[in-house]
Image 1 (tube, rainbow, N blue to C red):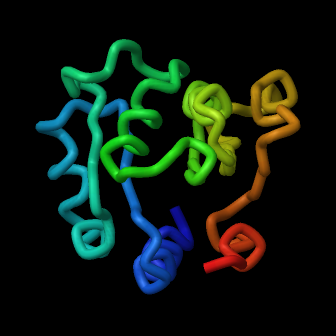
Image 2 (cartoon, rainbow, N blue to C red):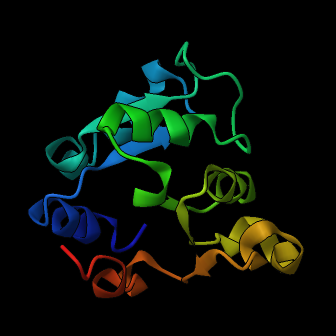
Length: 139
């Protein structure tokens, strides 16, 4: 996503712990990240969908709650960035601040019917639009 590398670097400089919580299975993650070395530089933890501690996949909050636990954080200290309705629902269900970046190519006109319209979800069109200072003003 446009703005992802810049956001990761900014989070890392601010010493904010970063986790990837992906539904992908563990052996596919290195293949997906090979062209994005900034992820290896900035990400502290990767939790995958086949982790034995995850009971249910998204839209269950299990993967996000496990990532928070492994980072030593409470759910209300976490921000989730998601592009899928099931991921957004998982973030909301986990009690985490949830940022939705809908991929309209796949959602089409149905976005209004999705959890993206939930009151606790902030919707942005691009990670480049993420209001970093509003979310992390106390660091």
